[in-house]
Length: 357
Image 1 (spheres, rainbow, N blue to C red):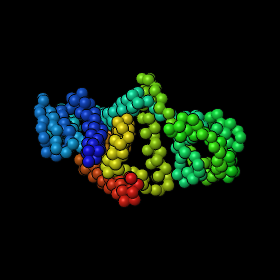
Image 2 (image 1 turned 30 degrees about the vertical axis):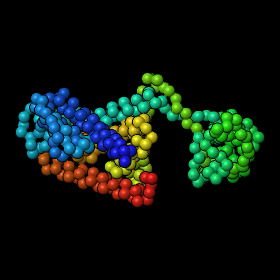
Image 3 (image 1 turned 180 degrees about the horizontal axis):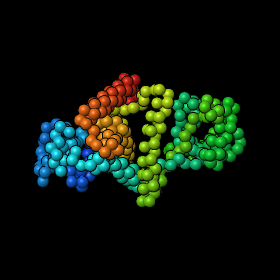
């Protein structure tokens, strides 16, 4: 019961924080560029409490998911031609305000990745010939090997590194190998040596031998500089990986079945809470990166779509008419709604198939 409550709270906090930070980016740049902010809310629904400072109403609402920034004159039908309104600003200033949300998501992700790397260290595969994980469905899964076993020799050849061992296994698909294995079994501290045989299967794509073992993972301290470098690499990886995935799906005319909606994200956060704070913070970094990247797509109603339309306005040197903006936003809303429903449908399928267990 308590663990379930903690998971719910962490899910709300995680999802809420990345959205609030996104909106805070719009808030900061709008204020900096002289645009009046009418309202900054954390959460949705009825206001629980709030206060007014200057021209801005700050409020905490009943449903603690995300938040919202309301800029003066940010809808064409509300535009009163006042100088501190959103649509009174030139196209490039409006683009900067729209860009600020995704940028803040990337800033948050960078900080979270750096904190995890700096405080908890980073995980690196060991080069020792020690079994870290066994892959189901491959020869090692039905053999005598266990996690933590050290492969001392293969066919009488001493193994001094993971790289050497992997190369030998890759070179012998379908050939029976004799392994000499060292195992330490608690509570005994003395190792036990035994021999076993295993036949690598042939990988269909690369044609190499595989037995289905992964290297042992070690936690390494990297210091301040190392944490910043690691964070930049993680940010790059979690940006490029979705883009490559989407590109491949488009080339193959396939639906993105791995896409997750709110239910899937909530389940991932729940699993992360079971692993510890480091996993929660890292997952929040991934979610923040994803939200920032998604909002940069040139889809009307998203920040990237707004930037795209404002840039067209700048090229044409005249505002787009209201009808054009309405049509673009309607198309964008329909597309976003379709993506949301599809992602939610995939979440339900994974739940029914038991893939979240």
